[in-house]
Structure formats: structure tokens, C-alpha cells
Image (tube, rainbow, N blue to C red; front, top):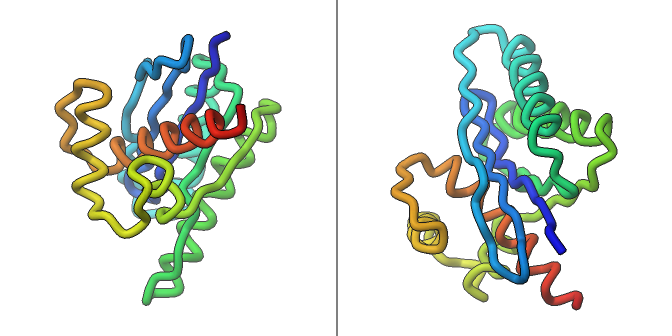
Amino acid sequence: MVKRIIGIDPGSYCTGYGIIEIVDSKIICINRGCIKTNSNYFFHRLQIIYLEILNILLNFKPENLVIEKSYIYKNYSSIIRLNQVSGVIILAAINNFISIFEYSVTKIRKCIVNKGNVDKKYINSIICKLFKIKEVNLNITDALAVAVAHSNYLNTLK
């Protein structure tokens, strides 16, 4: 049985995504990238993210979309904007009848290394080793980590 999952690390300037497939309990990265927006107009950036995510969902047809949950920043306007980015991503998934899951950073890290307080760079190195990639963009490896965490969570349900 093949399961396809897209993980998302939302950002208004760079939204990372990683698409994995689980085939016979083996995890394979089939695509990854970063949706970069360079518009000064925030609502135009939302439109770009929505359309790019929609295109990715239509091309790769994942069963699950897993998004990193926003946490409280010192700057409240940043959290509001990040939640708006998450909203357009979730809307794209809803419009394509894709199941949506949301994980906190702590839960993602616990699902990968059984500890919630590990360094972001450590998770990056684990993801790079898992998929044999040399990735420098943390948004992309964070998105792959979100997808892998969901895959690991699904395995605990079996």
C-alpha cells in the first residue's frame, strides 16, 4: 500500500514543502522545495502561496497534508500573518478533499527523535541522512520533518 504525504512549513516569504511516499514501510522523498514570494504586498504573497500549493497538490495528489502549527512569537503581527499563510494552505487542501493534520514543533521533534527539545539543526541533519540529501534550506527540511513525523505517527496507529 502506498501513502503520499505533503509536509508544510508555512512562511510568508518562503513556504517549505516536502512530499514523501510510504511504500512497504519505506519512506521516499519524491519532491521538495520552497515557495518564495518577493512581493511587498502581503495579500499578493498569500495569493502566490495558495496558487503554488494548489498546483503542487494537483500534480502530486497527496492523501494527507500536514502543516507545522504556528507558535506564539514575541511579535503578534507575525503570528497573525503566519496563521493567514496557514489558512490559505489549508483552504487549498480542503478544496481538494485532502485530509489535514497540524503538529506543533515539539510533537514533530518527538515523533522523529523521541525528544521535543532538540535543536532545529539536529532535526535537519537527521532528515538529510534519512533521504540522502544535502539540503541547506531549513524551511524544506522542516517541511520534510513534518511529513516524516506524520508517517511515524501513522505507524504507531497500526
